[in-house]
Image (spheres, rainbow, N blue to C red):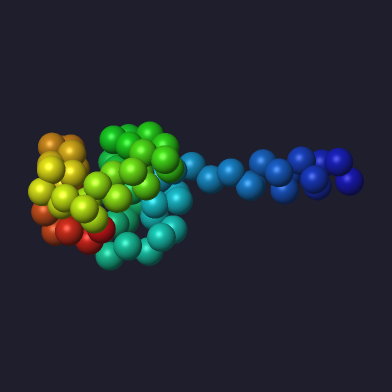
Length: 78
């Protein structure tokens, strides 16, 4: 019984790349989700960056464009 609860508790946390991928954002596959998670490293950073994009898209989008492998189409999906 303890093993069952331990297994459930271990599944409560999800890696950032899998979380980003699970959002179902167009053009964001698992590889792009990994690139984004390497750049942002936490959910808090992701939310902060998305908020910056909402208020001032130009500057915040540069963070992603500088990341090798992410293009404008992918970035504009956010």
